[in-house]
Each structure stands twice: as structure tokens, then as C-alpha cells.
Length: 286
Image (cartoon, rainbow, N blue to C red):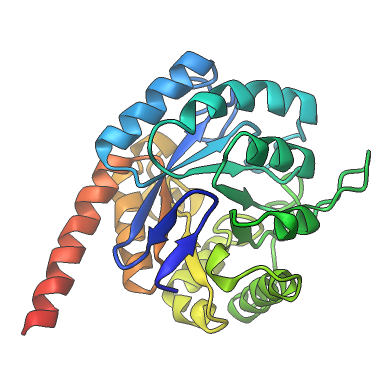
């Protein structure tokens, strides 16, 4: 896809897009706590834009391995004050949630993208509201569908078995096609292999090495390697010290066809991708 259609923006994917992570949580795996207040989260949003973020991804519930579910009311209390201000910052705003009620509230406030670790499979037990139907009914929001094996409580206790590339590809293809069948334009849909969500370290790296297979269904691909434990497993670095390995993983993901990278360390990633972009541009001129 040449563009990603979202609520307010047609995002040009000719150049790789950097999605900056804004965790409005006290317990995310690498940076939970510093941005839990509305003021701190908004200051972080502005800082990431200054560093070169093309998109901001706001998340108010931690989905780290072992994380407990957050009640919808608590998630909305954290998210909405930040979102109300963030939609005026001049960049597309993504909301990282799997709850249809939160999706609806975010879209009503002007969010551009729904980024769902459950790929719109989660159904509210209270009102049986479906995220898939909600997104399909919206006239233009973007959506990112991620692959997750199990759930945040079990995914790393019982990860996938064997080769994961084909199963992940097929899952994402079916999830995306289900939206297309409901009338959603392919240009609105992005897929994410879910690095670290129910996969072992070798499986995560196989998804990177064989990422071209994930492009076969024809949907835009987002890669989220930033500070993941697999990087720590091969470098020995703690989450806060994985800037270099995260930037390298982002470059490799883009080289292998990803058009969006979701990252904590925006400035370093933008600089790394700038080198890749200049090299690719020089190669095309030869």
C-alpha cells in the first residue's frame, strides 16, 4: 500500500513512518510510570514530535507479559484527558486498546487509528459490542491488527510451538480479510506480527528474517521491536539500555518491508532510518 488511510490523515508510506509510544500507565514493561499523569504524557507527546515522530500511539493499559486486565472505566480515565489534547498536536493519533467501548470513545474524540493487540477479536462481556463491527461502521479510521498467541497473562508461559511464520501470516490475512468483507478499504488496514506476544526468542527473529512472507496478503506491515525482551536475550541489555538494538531491529524491519515502526526511542530511530533512506535513495540513482 502506498498510503495508510486514517480518520483525518492519508499517511504517505513511501517513507517509513515512525510511531512514537506514549504509555499512560504505571506498569508498562520498560517505561511505565513517568508518563502516567496527563501533564507528563502530553509533554512526552510534544517531545516525541520534536524528535521526529510521524504518529503517536497512546496506550492506557499495560499489555506486558503477566499484566492483569484493566477495567474500561480506569482505562478511559487515564486515556481521554490526554487524547483530548493530543488530537490537536498536528500528527495522526493512534489509540492502543482492545476494548470496543474505549475504541468508540477514542474515535468520538477524533482518534485516527485503532491499534488492537487482539485484532478486533475481543468482545465486551457487558454489551457484546464487537470492535470489528465498530471499525467497519466508521467511515475512515485506520486500524492495526496484531497477532497474539494466548493473552497477556499466558502468552509467554505457553508460547507457540514450531514454525510461526505461516500461522502468523495466515492469522493476519484472515483478520484483515474479515474487515475487507465488511466493506473496509484495504488502505485503512495495517497488520503487526506481534513480536513478543506468545513467541519464543528464535520465533521472533524468524518473523524478522522471513518478514517478506508476512507481506504476501498485501496489507501494510507495522513492526514493534522496541525494547523487546528478545533484544535483551541476544544483547544482555536491560529494557532501558536497548536503544541501539531497537534501532537496528527497526532498520532491519524496514529493509524487510515494514512501512511503520512503533518505538520508544524516536530520535535514535529517525536517525537510523535516515541513514537507510539516504542509502536506498543513492542506490536508486546508480
